[in-house]
Length: 176
Image (cartoon, rainbow, N blue to C red; front, side):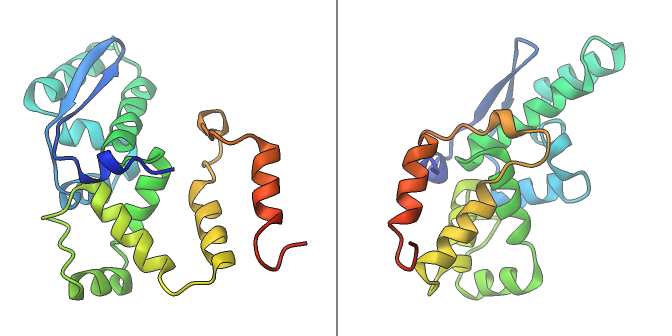
């Protein structure tokens, strides 16, 4: 479930990387998109962190005191906080919004990635992708969006238990 406060926040995001706080000042969705465009989400933190955080990350990585996987996890954590969703959901919606047809619809609607937070951008993309959809199609889109990538199943923090999810699915129109 998206965190609505993150979606509208203009606050900095601070994540812990090997016990050290690294801060990403508020960045518009366009900055996030640029940061992940050629590296996926793994290096976003090194590209978006403030000067002190970036220097600390690069210094620790260069000295061999920080595992790359730990820095990558910091990027995932920052993406989750700024997007108000699991990092993979924020990343998928961010990337989907950069597809020419989707981007065109958003721009024609006045949704500027340089004027919107990452959370707002994700909300706008989600709305565009599910607008005028049947309830079953929205459920399918949300299910695909929420499915964690391979290797991250343990991070999937779903507040509903399995039985509650099955009951909700069975109560949807058209389900038996």
